[in-house]
Length: 85
Image 1: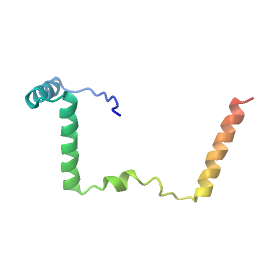
Image 2: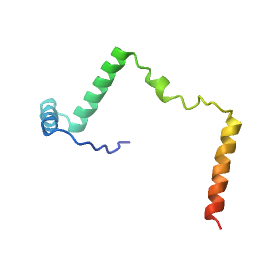
Image 3: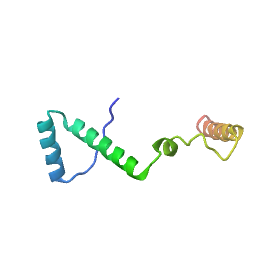
Image 4: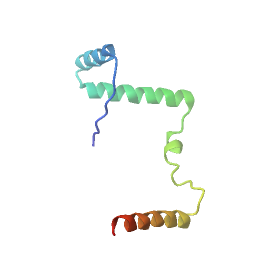
């Protein structure tokens, strides 16, 4: 599923995206997606970035799972008591 992304950009860059889209016979979205993928690949190769390691660390916790569950349940019950009176 596609999501909407909004950013302020220089007019010249926007024009260049339009020109590239016409020359490549693709959409502006396609040009931007290809450019970002290419840039990410270049940066990853240069800096040896481990994207998976940086983004999938939610499982690394300082507390045991039982403590996390207890904390979440306490927050839920507090919220319910506040709104269900």
